Length: 230
Picture: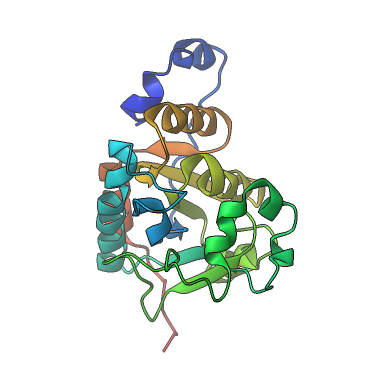
């Protein structure tokens, strides 16, 4: 079911009456995709910190439960993280001008803000996608990786909801996957930003679900994943 945060948006009733918010539903072969999970968003000294918003602060706990469910169900897990390697951030292109804070992902940066969080690190069977843009699909081979796995449903969590989660969820739909975003498992700088973004995603691009629904479905896994693999 659509989450209370989306339903409480002041425009929800009118957009529902306009035949928006159509439910995609779950396919039979989901994968969990965690976006940009690193210290930058939960450090008081970071320009990207979410610590002022309780929901954003608590989102890693939800991500850990989602990850545990996927592990229990042998559901594929993928991670996307930003990485820049040019000393002058030229590979950050125009985005590095618009958002200079992304230099925390530059090779050699000494602040340590790109470090994984405790309990949220890739396992040996996981796929890690390195990206330079908000969407984990843009300029990467993520679509091909998911297609090779025969995934039909991409469950997105991570940060920030209004930035990289949104861009990834929209592109997942564009590549023909069922796009699902987990409310509690994504975070942003304020409740207002979180609500507006999730409402817009739910209206046109993705199903927004609560943690409980995602945990149950990820924990169920799917037949065939991992067969024939060492």
